[in-house]
Length: 185
Image (cartoon, rainbow, N blue to C red; front, side, top):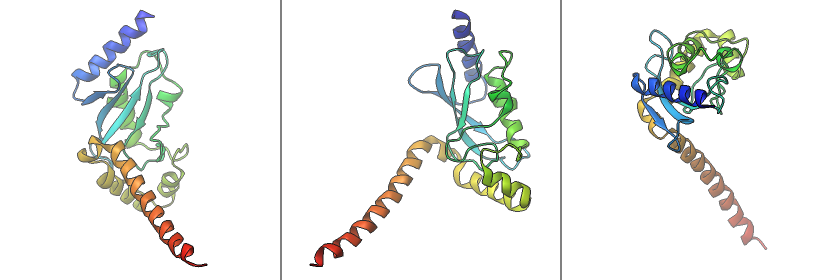
């Protein structure tokens, strides 16, 4: 079992020494986030995403789990979970691939060539096939709103606090409704 762990260490070190900003989770090499920039000359150019990477114990024989932390509008990325639908990661992974392949080839290719016929985000796929111009506009809107450097610093905290605000507004509205109800005999 030392071979997979040495390979894991080597791949993570290669990623750390590359141009990617990386932060470990729980001080280990199994989970970490990587800052990923949208590919040049694409709709995603200028966007910055935090990508969560989880390496299974059997890595590199088993593929890493890859997901976008901040939102992206793409047919092959689940909008809620950030999960990625990419054959080379999910089905045809090989120990010949490494983490640099994921960030230098697989993810850029995913963003450059979305596959609307195998979607995780049905709305994005449908819009891409029916109205490409509106799809392009929505991709750029998401990049502007969710894929800026400041969005990835505390993207999970920001999303949670946004949800809490929505809940508080709903709670305050329902408690206002209850007050008049209590006054009636």
